[in-house]
Image (cartoon, rainbow, N blue to C red; front, side, top):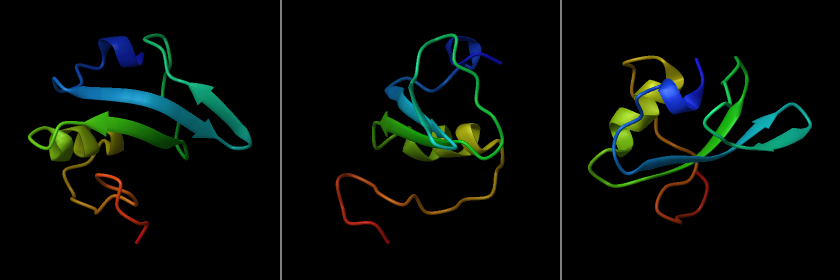
Length: 72
């Protein structure tokens, strides 16, 4: 499903998608594939909902980088 039709929460923007050795700048027509790494900006109130939607799971998992903090 293209990102433009995915129904991402308000305040969530998919910036880029790393697919293998390629870095794609996300557009409404971009579709996510298994193994993609997603860079997104989200408001604090919608960040968890955005993470779960992007991952297509209800299982919480901490992000690698959040609010400009160091990678964990």
